[in-house]
Length: 546
Image (tube, rainbow, N blue to C red; front, side, top):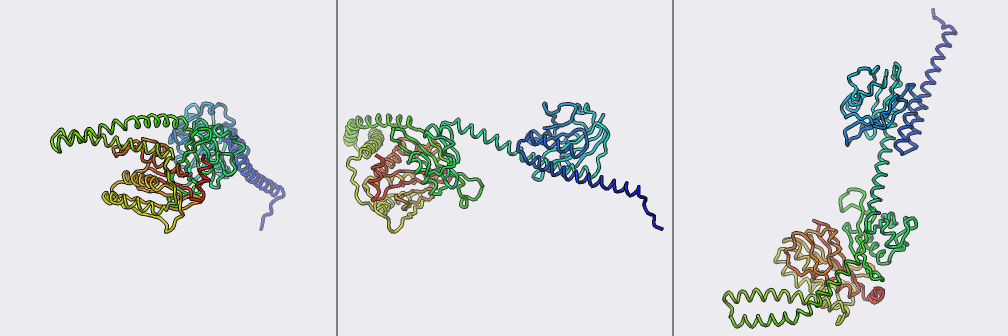
């Protein structure tokens, strides 16, 4: 015989079912509310408070708190509380990782439910007992596959946490964990960005950055002042539309179009007598093999080096005048020692001492001749520019330096196309410039190393480059390489040289309407190059430069 429930029993059962459905609906609604609330802000403190208020709408207890893992300090730090009797946030409650109930939750990634905490030996912070908590659930919060904190819910009266409430707390804790981790990452990024901006604006160097499309993405305060720009007006502009000095824009565009992974350095003499030195460097966002990397943007650092150029010019003037004054007495001394050597004969200690003196005087003579050669080429007097075949120039220089290359076991590779357009140049001085570059590579490339000389046409210029796999040059030294007498500090100081070779190269090339450049990375060798205007463009180039 089937027992038919009474109408009261059915009503009671329906009421309980309705209550359960409403409770589940409320829980789902609360989960959605939590998800929506914590995703609306990247402000860490606002997210913390929003999360706590949403939790207390779901679980009918008195109070809740959120503690976050501080990995640097190896602590769990209470960052927000709601409904507590005492303030444990102003002076944050800190629990060493691995200690107490929270340490158990973090270490084991498990929910911990407990009742009355009075006298509980698991309390890592004894003062917490003053809260009078009668029931508590500690739930781990996750983000990116790890525990980032603990969501705690508490009641000051006895309370039994149902299984479905624990499930809801787990879901809420993970939602809050992800949101808090995002907020913390955002705050860290914002803090780093602010610190970087402060550093960029405090430096005396002008800094301009572009993205990989050539649009300006950053300009610091020094650049605004140096170039009379306004950040709000220039950010986002294509570089070609930016009101920069044409030579600066051209140098940056050249570096970007060349696609080189090394820094590019060039100087810009301004019409008002100032000199600017610029370093253009590619920026990479991802660590990839060098052969596969593509620049994500470019940074140009510009220094006003006018004071250095003035000091250099004063030094040059002094040394030039001294060279003129020393030439005659030096010649007299050389002749006198040579005559004395002939009188004493070819043997004996006196003759040996005289020979040492002659060697020193000859080195002085070479130095003085180099200085006077610089003065001569700078004046432009006697410069005989004719149609010049760069291929023929390279072949002459290579033939002359090859014996020295072979003697040190180095290899010399020539990469020159069969035909190259002519340039207007003085063969004597262009030979001097290129042989200086080859000699420089030969001196600083280790025995058994590789050197290459190449030539190619790009836009309106003919490029001649000398590459080596020597020790490379640090960026801070590259801006001074073409200065007179400058030698890169380091172990190569014992290599003989006057410090004038690259200065002569720069002077010769500029007298031909061109420019010099260097690209180098420490440990990866160097490229020294000359960009020479083609014959059809040389006069226009020199007219613009003057």
